[in-house]
Each structure stands twice: as structure tokens, then as C-alpha cells.
Length: 186
Image (tube, rainbow, N blue to C red; front, side, top):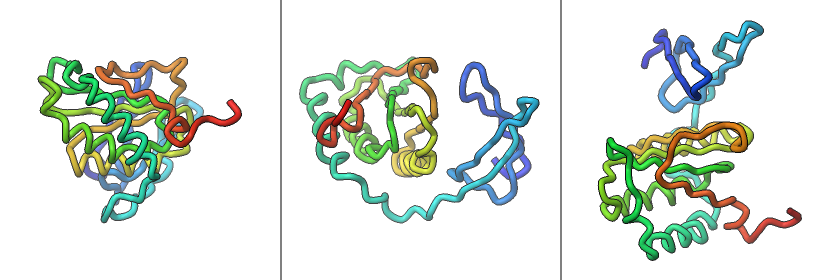
């Protein structure tokens, strides 16, 4: 899209957003919209992501414990049981994704093992987190996944107890604290 184009987004079944793309907005910029008193959504601000050079340094647990969990699922034969949708897309759900630091590990794993997943032509990742505090991290993940592997990725803020998520053939619901040594005080 280009500046001046009207984007029509339908992030949920109950919400449709229409807004004109402001000047100097590029792909993977973080655009913030705000609802006015009448319920119309208006452009509020645009944040530009830093240039993509190397992936940001990620916590060790994403290449350690998280990778070990993915490898264990593979070794137990779960990958060949995954069935993509009718267009060959394997939809991967990542509930309570937090910052989604594991995006590089997950993206590389999916691409490396695609041939072991019968019928899978491409991947789509949908994540959800209760708060939108990590929108910049999500945008970095979306940009990296698309540019490195052409994996589409959408992450939204929502309450998993109330907000339905898109259908997924594989849901990786690992609370991040479990891969960092456990949850203390819960």
C-alpha cells in the first residue's frame, strides 16, 4: 500500500478498521489507531522500527529450553501428524506469547522441518497476549519472520478466556516462565 491508500483491516469478526495510510509510513512500521467518541478509528502515531541488520540478541532460553521442547515434539513424531488447512497452510497458534522472543527459534524450526509435515506449503503464526505492551517486539518478529522465511505472523492483544483465536492446526501453548526456570509465587 502507499500513502493515501485506505486500508481496510478486519482484525476480528466484530471489528473492521478503515484508515488512510499517512505519508512516510512503510511496511512493518507500527501504526497506532485510536477510537473517537463516535467509535471511528483514527490514525494516532507511527513508530519506525530500527533498521534490520542482525536479529536482536534473544534470551538463552529461546535457543536452549524452547528449542529442546520443539526437538522433543519432533523426535516423538508429532510433526508428521500435523495437517495443514485446505490451501496447504499450517496455522500455528502461540497463546500468551508475551514479547514473543522465541520467534527466530520457531521460524527456523518450521522452515527446517517443513518437508516432514505432509502437505504443508507455508506457515502462518497467530499469537495473543493479554496486554499490548510488547507491540514493538511483535512488529520486529513479524518483519523478521516475513523477510527471512515468508512466514506471515499476526499478534494481537486479547483475553484468551473471552476472545476467540483463529483456527490453528498446531498450538504451542508454553507459558514463557516455564522455560526460564519455573513460575515463582503463583
